[in-house]
Image (tube, rainbow, N blue to C red; front, side, top):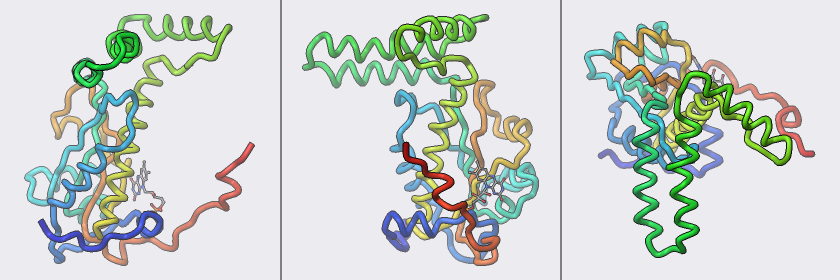
Length: 243
Ligand SMILES: Cc1cc2nc3c(=O)[nH]c(=O)nc-3n(C[C@H](O)[C@H](O)[C@H](O)COP(=O)(O)O)c2cc1C
Protein backbone atom coordinates (compact mmCIF):
# COMPACT_ATOMS: atom_id res chain seq x y z
CA UNK A 1 0.00 0.00 0.00
CA UNK A 2 1.26 3.47 -0.90
CA UNK A 3 2.27 5.53 2.11
CA UNK A 4 -0.35 7.90 3.43
CA UNK A 5 0.40 10.98 1.36
CA UNK A 6 -0.36 13.53 4.03
CA UNK A 7 -1.87 13.38 7.46
CA UNK A 8 -3.80 16.59 7.96
CA UNK A 9 -5.26 17.73 11.25
CA UNK A 10 -9.01 17.28 11.59
CA UNK A 11 -10.05 20.90 11.00
CA UNK A 12 -7.63 21.30 8.13
CA UNK A 13 -9.05 18.13 6.57
CA UNK A 14 -12.58 19.47 6.95
CA UNK A 15 -11.62 22.81 5.42
CA UNK A 16 -9.71 21.30 2.54
CA UNK A 17 -12.35 18.79 1.55
CA UNK A 18 -14.26 20.06 -1.42
CA UNK A 19 -16.57 18.35 -3.86
CA UNK A 20 -14.18 17.81 -6.74
CA UNK A 21 -15.73 17.12 -10.13
CA UNK A 22 -12.63 16.39 -12.20
CA UNK A 23 -10.09 13.72 -11.42
CA UNK A 24 -6.56 13.28 -12.73
CA UNK A 25 -6.19 10.28 -15.03
CA UNK A 26 -2.37 10.20 -14.91
CA UNK A 27 -1.39 10.35 -11.21
CA UNK A 28 -1.18 6.86 -9.68
CA UNK A 29 -4.24 6.18 -7.55
CA UNK A 30 -3.94 3.77 -4.64
CA UNK A 31 -7.19 1.84 -4.44
CA UNK A 32 -6.00 0.27 -1.18
CA UNK A 33 -6.39 3.67 0.45
CA UNK A 34 -10.05 3.65 -0.57
CA UNK A 35 -10.35 0.41 1.35
CA UNK A 36 -8.56 1.95 4.34
CA UNK A 37 -10.97 4.91 4.33
CA UNK A 38 -13.97 2.61 4.02
CA UNK A 39 -12.72 0.60 7.00
CA UNK A 40 -12.58 3.90 8.92
CA UNK A 41 -16.07 4.81 7.67
CA UNK A 42 -17.61 1.72 9.18
CA UNK A 43 -16.56 3.00 12.59
CA UNK A 44 -19.09 5.82 12.18
CA UNK A 45 -22.05 5.98 14.52
CA UNK A 46 -25.09 4.20 13.13
CA UNK A 47 -28.62 3.65 14.31
CA UNK A 48 -28.88 0.80 16.87
CA UNK A 49 -25.52 -0.40 15.57
CA UNK A 50 -27.40 -2.38 12.93
CA UNK A 51 -24.92 -1.27 10.24
CA UNK A 52 -27.57 -1.46 7.55
CA UNK A 53 -25.44 -0.35 4.63
CA UNK A 54 -22.85 -1.59 2.21
CA UNK A 55 -20.27 0.15 0.11
CA UNK A 56 -20.16 -1.21 -3.41
CA UNK A 57 -16.79 -0.41 -4.96
CA UNK A 58 -16.55 0.14 -8.70
CA UNK A 59 -12.91 0.88 -9.58
CA UNK A 60 -11.70 2.15 -12.95
CA UNK A 61 -10.81 -1.43 -13.96
CA UNK A 62 -14.38 -2.65 -13.45
CA UNK A 63 -16.28 -3.63 -16.61
CA UNK A 64 -19.28 -1.66 -15.34
CA UNK A 65 -17.46 1.57 -14.40
CA UNK A 66 -18.29 3.40 -17.64
CA UNK A 67 -21.88 2.25 -17.58
CA UNK A 68 -22.27 3.39 -13.99
CA UNK A 69 -20.74 6.79 -14.82
CA UNK A 70 -23.24 7.08 -17.66
CA UNK A 71 -26.06 6.45 -15.18
CA UNK A 72 -24.66 9.26 -13.04
CA UNK A 73 -25.92 11.43 -15.89
CA UNK A 74 -22.39 11.47 -17.33
CA UNK A 75 -21.32 13.95 -14.66
CA UNK A 76 -17.58 14.56 -14.92
CA UNK A 77 -17.27 13.67 -11.24
CA UNK A 78 -18.30 10.18 -12.30
CA UNK A 79 -16.79 9.79 -15.78
CA UNK A 80 -13.34 10.92 -14.59
CA UNK A 81 -13.54 9.18 -11.17
CA UNK A 82 -10.84 6.60 -10.62
CA UNK A 83 -13.27 4.69 -8.45
CA UNK A 84 -16.96 5.05 -7.74
CA UNK A 85 -18.26 4.03 -4.35
CA UNK A 86 -21.97 3.31 -4.28
CA UNK A 87 -23.36 3.70 -0.78
CA UNK A 88 -26.23 1.25 -0.52
CA UNK A 89 -28.70 1.03 2.34
CA UNK A 90 -29.59 -2.50 3.43
CA UNK A 91 -32.80 -2.12 5.41
CA UNK A 92 -33.58 -5.65 4.27
CA UNK A 93 -30.74 -7.10 6.39
CA UNK A 94 -32.19 -5.96 9.71
CA UNK A 95 -32.86 -9.51 10.99
CA UNK A 96 -29.34 -10.84 10.49
CA UNK A 97 -27.74 -7.62 11.73
CA UNK A 98 -29.95 -7.62 14.83
CA UNK A 99 -29.03 -11.27 15.39
CA UNK A 100 -25.32 -10.42 15.10
CA UNK A 101 -25.71 -7.70 17.73
CA UNK A 102 -27.71 -10.06 19.94
CA UNK A 103 -25.01 -12.72 19.78
CA UNK A 104 -22.29 -10.17 20.40
CA UNK A 105 -24.06 -8.74 23.44
CA UNK A 106 -24.76 -12.23 24.76
CA UNK A 107 -21.08 -13.05 24.83
CA UNK A 108 -19.89 -9.58 25.86
CA UNK A 109 -22.24 -9.35 28.86
CA UNK A 110 -21.64 -12.83 30.22
CA UNK A 111 -20.32 -11.49 33.52
CA UNK A 112 -22.85 -8.68 33.87
CA UNK A 113 -25.90 -8.66 36.17
CA UNK A 114 -28.79 -10.65 34.73
CA UNK A 115 -31.13 -7.63 34.63
CA UNK A 116 -28.71 -5.49 32.62
CA UNK A 117 -28.02 -8.38 30.26
CA UNK A 118 -31.72 -9.03 29.67
CA UNK A 119 -32.35 -5.35 28.99
CA UNK A 120 -29.60 -5.17 26.38
CA UNK A 121 -30.71 -8.39 24.69
CA UNK A 122 -34.35 -7.35 24.69
CA UNK A 123 -33.44 -4.29 22.65
CA UNK A 124 -32.51 -6.57 19.75
CA UNK A 125 -35.00 -9.37 20.34
CA UNK A 126 -38.00 -7.18 21.14
CA UNK A 127 -37.74 -3.52 20.22
CA UNK A 128 -35.86 -3.76 16.92
CA UNK A 129 -38.26 -6.38 15.46
CA UNK A 130 -41.18 -4.12 16.42
CA UNK A 131 -39.59 -1.22 14.59
CA UNK A 132 -38.29 -3.05 11.52
CA UNK A 133 -40.92 -5.73 10.86
CA UNK A 134 -43.28 -5.09 7.98
CA UNK A 135 -46.93 -6.11 8.17
CA UNK A 136 -49.95 -4.55 6.48
CA UNK A 137 -51.18 -1.65 8.59
CA UNK A 138 -48.16 -1.90 10.87
CA UNK A 139 -47.08 1.73 10.39
CA UNK A 140 -50.51 3.04 11.33
CA UNK A 141 -50.65 0.80 14.38
CA UNK A 142 -47.17 1.85 15.53
CA UNK A 143 -48.01 5.51 15.03
CA UNK A 144 -51.21 5.14 17.04
CA UNK A 145 -49.37 3.39 19.84
CA UNK A 146 -46.70 6.11 19.84
CA UNK A 147 -49.40 8.77 19.86
CA UNK A 148 -51.28 7.32 22.82
CA UNK A 149 -48.17 6.49 24.80
CA UNK A 150 -46.92 9.98 24.00
CA UNK A 151 -49.92 11.55 25.70
CA UNK A 152 -48.52 10.56 29.08
CA UNK A 153 -44.76 10.64 28.61
CA UNK A 154 -42.05 11.53 26.12
CA UNK A 155 -42.16 9.05 23.27
CA UNK A 156 -40.22 8.50 20.07
CA UNK A 157 -42.64 9.36 17.26
CA UNK A 158 -40.53 8.27 14.28
CA UNK A 159 -41.76 4.71 14.16
CA UNK A 160 -43.32 4.47 10.70
CA UNK A 161 -41.79 2.85 7.65
CA UNK A 162 -40.70 6.17 6.11
CA UNK A 163 -38.90 7.13 9.31
CA UNK A 164 -37.18 3.74 9.46
CA UNK A 165 -35.91 4.31 5.90
CA UNK A 166 -34.77 7.82 6.81
CA UNK A 167 -32.94 6.44 9.82
CA UNK A 168 -31.14 3.87 7.67
CA UNK A 169 -30.15 6.60 5.20
CA UNK A 170 -28.90 8.82 8.05
CA UNK A 171 -26.48 6.13 9.16
CA UNK A 172 -25.30 5.48 5.60
CA UNK A 173 -24.75 9.22 5.06
CA UNK A 174 -22.72 9.54 8.26
CA UNK A 175 -20.48 6.68 7.14
CA UNK A 176 -20.18 8.37 3.74
CA UNK A 177 -18.99 11.55 5.41
CA UNK A 178 -16.34 9.73 7.43
CA UNK A 179 -15.19 8.09 4.22
CA UNK A 180 -14.90 11.40 2.37
CA UNK A 181 -12.97 13.02 5.22
CA UNK A 182 -10.69 9.99 5.36
CA UNK A 183 -10.02 10.30 1.64
CA UNK A 184 -9.08 13.95 2.08
CA UNK A 185 -6.84 13.04 5.03
CA UNK A 186 -4.85 10.67 2.81
CA UNK A 187 -4.61 13.26 0.04
CA UNK A 188 -7.44 12.23 -2.28
CA UNK A 189 -10.63 13.93 -3.33
CA UNK A 190 -14.26 12.92 -3.58
CA UNK A 191 -17.59 14.11 -4.91
CA UNK A 192 -20.84 12.86 -3.39
CA UNK A 193 -23.59 12.54 -5.98
CA UNK A 194 -27.32 12.08 -5.91
CA UNK A 195 -27.68 12.89 -9.58
CA UNK A 196 -28.08 9.36 -10.94
CA UNK A 197 -30.76 7.08 -12.30
CA UNK A 198 -31.42 5.04 -9.16
CA UNK A 199 -33.62 2.51 -10.93
CA UNK A 200 -31.01 1.69 -13.53
CA UNK A 201 -28.13 1.71 -11.03
CA UNK A 202 -30.12 -0.68 -8.85
CA UNK A 203 -30.47 -3.02 -11.81
CA UNK A 204 -26.86 -2.64 -12.97
CA UNK A 205 -25.53 -3.56 -9.53
CA UNK A 206 -28.08 -6.32 -9.15
CA UNK A 207 -29.10 -4.97 -5.75
CA UNK A 208 -31.65 -6.72 -3.58
CA UNK A 209 -35.15 -5.29 -3.60
CA UNK A 210 -34.78 -3.95 -0.04
CA UNK A 211 -31.69 -1.92 -0.94
CA UNK A 212 -31.66 1.76 -1.78
CA UNK A 213 -28.88 3.97 -2.99
CA UNK A 214 -27.90 6.63 -0.50
CA UNK A 215 -25.32 8.33 -2.72
CA UNK A 216 -22.55 7.58 -5.18
CA UNK A 217 -19.12 8.96 -4.40
CA UNK A 218 -16.61 9.74 -7.12
CA UNK A 219 -13.03 9.33 -5.90
CA UNK A 220 -9.55 10.08 -7.14
CA UNK A 221 -6.74 12.60 -7.20
CA UNK A 222 -8.59 15.84 -7.86
CA UNK A 223 -7.57 18.41 -10.43
CA UNK A 224 -7.70 22.13 -9.51
CA UNK A 225 -10.22 22.69 -12.31
CA UNK A 226 -12.53 20.23 -10.57
CA UNK A 227 -13.37 22.75 -7.86
CA UNK A 228 -16.10 24.97 -9.20
CA UNK A 229 -15.40 28.28 -7.49
CA UNK A 230 -14.82 29.52 -3.97
CA UNK A 231 -16.63 27.72 -1.22
CA UNK A 232 -19.89 29.44 -0.26
CA UNK A 233 -21.58 28.98 3.08
CA UNK A 234 -24.24 31.09 4.73
CA UNK A 235 -23.27 33.11 7.75
CA UNK A 236 -22.93 30.65 10.62
CA UNK A 237 -25.49 32.71 12.59
CA UNK A 238 -28.06 31.40 10.11
CA UNK A 239 -27.08 27.80 10.69
CA UNK A 240 -26.13 27.60 14.35
CA UNK A 241 -28.74 28.57 16.92
CA UNK A 242 -28.57 28.58 20.67
CA UNK A 243 -31.69 28.48 22.76
C1 LIG B 1 -26.33 14.19 -0.78
C2 LIG B 1 -25.50 15.01 -1.72
C3 LIG B 1 -25.70 14.92 -3.07
C4 LIG B 1 -24.91 15.64 -3.96
N1 LIG B 1 -25.08 15.45 -5.31
C5 LIG B 1 -24.23 16.04 -6.15
C6 LIG B 1 -24.27 15.74 -7.54
O1 LIG B 1 -25.06 14.93 -8.00
N2 LIG B 1 -23.39 16.36 -8.35
C7 LIG B 1 -22.47 17.24 -7.89
O2 LIG B 1 -21.70 17.75 -8.69
N3 LIG B 1 -22.39 17.55 -6.57
C8 LIG B 1 -23.23 16.96 -5.70
N4 LIG B 1 -23.12 17.21 -4.35
C9 LIG B 1 -22.09 18.11 -3.87
C10 LIG B 1 -22.65 19.45 -3.39
O3 LIG B 1 -23.05 20.22 -4.48
C11 LIG B 1 -21.57 20.14 -2.56
O4 LIG B 1 -21.30 19.38 -1.42
C12 LIG B 1 -21.98 21.57 -2.14
O5 LIG B 1 -22.13 22.39 -3.24
C13 LIG B 1 -20.95 22.18 -1.20
O6 LIG B 1 -19.66 22.21 -1.79
P1 LIG B 1 -18.39 21.52 -1.11
O7 LIG B 1 -18.72 20.04 -0.96
O8 LIG B 1 -17.25 21.74 -2.08
O9 LIG B 1 -18.15 22.15 0.21
C14 LIG B 1 -23.91 16.50 -3.46
C15 LIG B 1 -23.72 16.60 -2.08
C16 LIG B 1 -24.49 15.85 -1.22
C17 LIG B 1 -24.22 15.92 0.25
